[in-house]
Image (cartoon, rainbow, N blue to C red; front, side, top):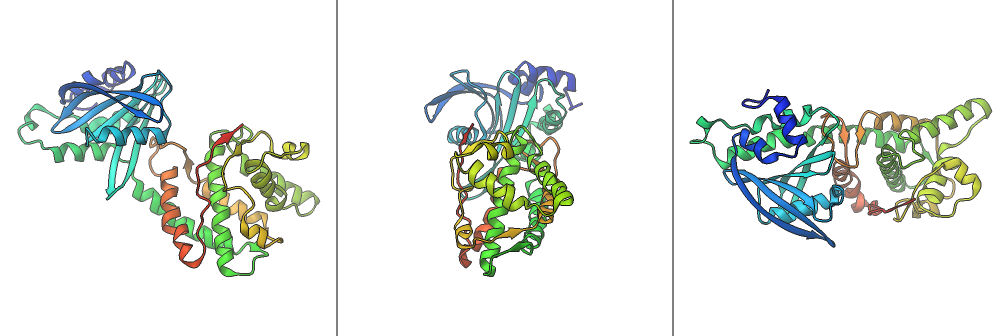
Length: 355
């Protein structure tokens, strides 16, 4: 148990959304004020329900009783509230889900967000463990400082970004070099390097959306399609996963609306993405005989499968989670630095899903 509160009592508080009494039991000071912020055209109300030495606990809801806003909107809400309450732990909640969100300043004008998600039908183990450091005893009050409070919140609610990012990045570099060697039909070395980045970027984006079931309802869509081609290759000669499937998926599926009956049968039910990532790339126009062997994709998927892919941060199983923020680091540190050599990966855009 957390000092001063049992797990059962903790779980009861959060399932009833009784955050104020929870934090009072954790030794925080009673505090109440309310406010609102407008993001786009939506009004979001918030309540500040507890504080300790200048650190605030804020509960956020939508005035229109909408679902919990998506990650990008939650970040905007956090930025807005932080202008009034600079140091805070935000709690977003709906009927069955909560996101406990902590904003982590990294350097000037840059920050990260760590979120712990709680589903009411599941056990509160992860959230209970993260909240364990937020208990303060009465005999600590005379010496507790703002720095101490902030350190405890940061320790409890910061995902170990550095470890997972470094591990993924180091492995990614090796896989990038290996994948390059499997590409045929491109002459210039810089172009090979660039097209490797383009292809891996596309595949990683697909990993995020397949884990959400957006690719024919199959969370292992790419792996299963590759296996079909490998099976066909073993039975009937060579079938190219790259040429016969990925190029159709990228250009006619995700990047285009025009899909004939044969292509629909091949791809299944997938979204159209309104963005440039999957359109015919300039290197694909420059080189019309690009080939990549099936085994190269088997190796890269084996690497990707070592990680859990989340569009939102879900730190319940620390150590192998990949989210868009981690990939942002990879692209900035590894891929985009190639712009100096004419290899800027400029397809990083926002994409809207169209069913």
